[in-house]
Image (cartoon, rainbow, N blue to C red; front, side, top):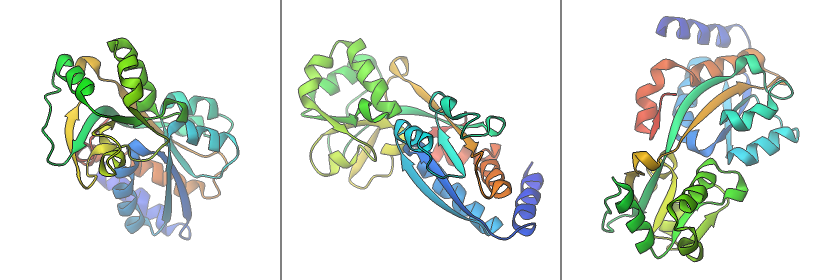
Length: 247
């Protein structure tokens, strides 16, 4: 597999001039994409611009005609774009992300291994930050539903800090919240923030992130090569280090 990938990258680099590519990706996959893309650029000579947003926001941007070469969002968000903006035959599952919790660095770490401990931590919080469901973020939509299922939505509503996109953990850094809930990959590595861990397994929700090549890509061979790099089965260790799992 490794030899095949190296040959394909070499052909992509040597068979055509270097291309400028645009990768649109949901935030949960960005940390992994940055490292994979850096390696891809070294191997091929292509240059890749990475732009992020919530799955819902990216879906609207692409549907509205924004140019891209490769798109990474959940399959349910990509489905309406297949055949019109994304080549259905190119679609590949790239990673799986679960929801996690983060707190301020140095704060007491709650035990959230079980649902009761998770619920207790939420109800004891001064403010809880998560992605605004209206923005189309996968984690925010699920968290809002989860609060309803847990019977604590009304109690948390006045203490909820809704984030339109980006890193929810920034609301811990600026003091607007003392708990952040988002995909684990987006909570890890934020300066001044401590990643507590994934939410309890029986409450957990995993989101698959898939990649697809634009039907209108001006650099189709290079875009195919980029998606191949993102879908490399050998990315598993890297994905794990970023709080993601192989799909």
